[in-house]
Length: 158
Image 1 (cartoon, one colour):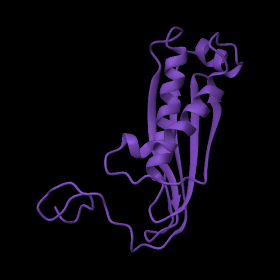
Image 2 (spheres, rainbow, N blue to C red):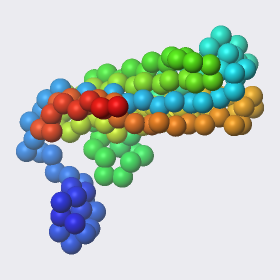
Image 3 (cartoon, rainbow, N blue to C red):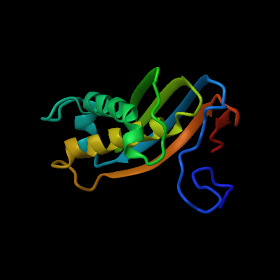
């Protein structure tokens, strides 16, 4: 089990010691999608949901969530994020695409922060629109790209 960084040789959980790593600019980009009925999709896109501008509320929720990732994910290092941004697009009827980018100058990556941001943004969309469409589906939460650090640059291949 010692090849897994969050476990010691005896299998006990541990927080990874990053004190010997160099501080570098680290960036991660993640995405998620929310599938929904056409009427719900149109109302979100047209900003006509009674609770308000769904994407703007979800954007704020995603940013706030990224900043609190270490409180949500066990053994995740608290990071002084330098930037978090979320973007929303409507690539086809019934599908909302969410993308988050997180950045830090630090000793460990920000993949979990970007993934947390898109996850919470998607959950916020669901919460704000559940009275319109309980059949919404959150899917394809995934890391798209990361840079910085010892492991180098990663870009999803598909």
